Length: 189
Image (cartoon, rainbow, N blue to C red; front, top):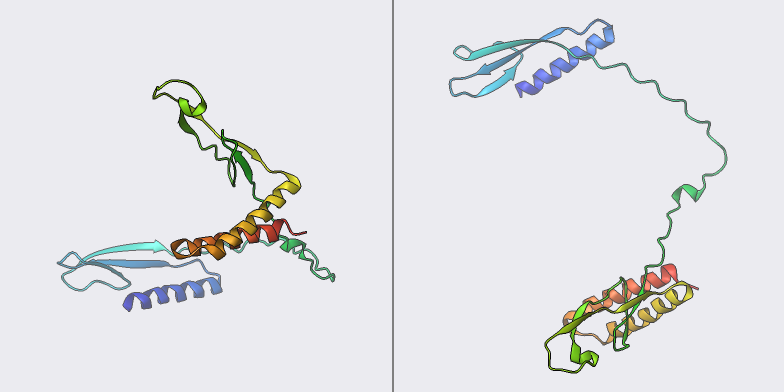
């Protein structure tokens, strides 16, 4: 409590010095250390038996306030919402990925599904354990085809959300809402 009173006293003296225009006075700070090694700072002399260090310091003075730039004149025209314009991000990309059997699937990122396929699956003769690395071919949907595909995915996700029960139900509903949001934001006609 005494420390708070000391700080308040220093601030009050500082305010008075600034108001009078006089240079800031020096201040004395006493550092008192008792026999247990505990230290404290105060504005008066230490108690008998304590180690006392005195520091005399120049009270800091605040810099004069910086000059402010003149404000532009206020217009009587109503404020426009142009400053509140938040650009809508582009339609999320969607890819059609096709595997070596000709089966297609959609993916929101290039997903080549790299895997090692045994040679006999690819039509090579022999009983070898050898395999060949294959990747799916992914092509990005563009233009109207992109929104059409998102609309179809929204229908499929809504159907899955209605038919899914158990642990996957919440995920299916969340995915249906996410895709519906994409369609309503980017692909509304």
